[in-house]
Length: 387
Ligand SMILES: NC(=O)c1ccc[n+]([C@@H]2O[C@H](COP(=O)([O-])OP(=O)(O)OC[C@H]3O[C@@H](n4cnc5c(N)ncnc54)[C@H](O)[C@@H]3O)[C@@H](O)[C@H]2O)c1
Image (cartoon, rainbow, N blue to C red; front, side, top):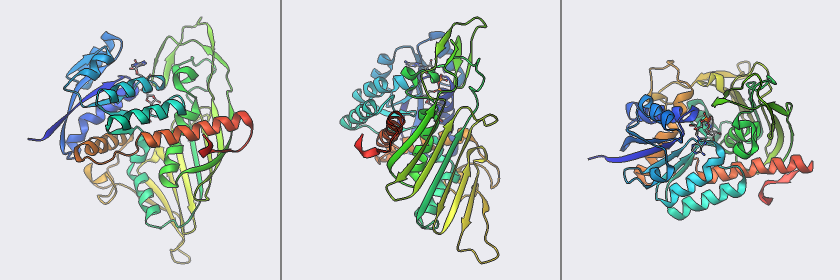
């Protein structure tokens, strides 16, 4: 009989829904070597978590995390609570011998991220972080092209992550604008994804220099919030925004390539405009998340007169993950990246192989985030390995 893995999920809003959906789909489209059981979803508000359990298809719910991690029918703890809760939840889960999947950024700061990594290593459990954009087939194809030498020596990585959801000064003070809950603003939320993609595709960062700005410093206190939305009463008192609205930085990678990064929530008109471009000695690659099935590829080896960027639709069975879904050209979307990352996590447990990206990748991302923050404070280049 096939081995069963019981999952306990913490959080039931934006990411809680994305992970619940993904966990339910894995066995429908892929062939994992285990049966995945959605055992319990956990939240602090009994009414809310009970409703989520029913709607998302969980067998039961818990309002106490302590109870959740002690349950014998649970093998994996999946954390989709805000960033300030990640550390205690992940360490408690590891100490109870559970495998841990945790949303990004791993922790509020580098010291906490390192404690989390030490805890999962000591417990000998599998660990993975939710850098889901790695799992778009077109991004995986980019990685294959780079690894096979088609791009040659990489000279440039140019990353943009542009949103505009808080550009209205009356938008309320949601948890993402509070440093004690989020760690940082656009930097740790959006920049973290770019940093991870750059590490995945180009390699580790050597040194960084950055600049950062909070355009709107006070906002009405929030009454209700989920994911990227929030409501405030018309007469709500004001509170202080304690994170960056935009952070830009430059880097030199260990391989010698140069990188530029821009993460902002003030790019009017852009909703989830994550994109990157890579230029190498033999070719270039361009990816835009809002057209996530496509990868632009330029090969300098093409014959003279025919050179130009070609648009590849990464929906053919040869493209990573694409064959598990629909016929060629029947495109996939945002939610599929979560199916792919969680499929890989359960397979790492089933097959006893390392999960990736893991908490080590989470720590390295927190290290770059913090190096940029230090550079903003000091107005100087910071060597990442000094942190
Ligand atoms: N991978 C991605 O692209 C992506 C996208 C969005 C959010 N995230 C990350 O996911 C996490 C959650 O973000 P979200 O958008 O789902 O937030 P959200 O506000 O929509 O939901 C957070 C959930 O956590 C619960 N919660 C809050 N504090 C808690 C605590 N102390 N203990 C237990 N539960 C708690 C809330 O009740 C809610 O159910 C964050 O770390 C965020 O950075 C990742």
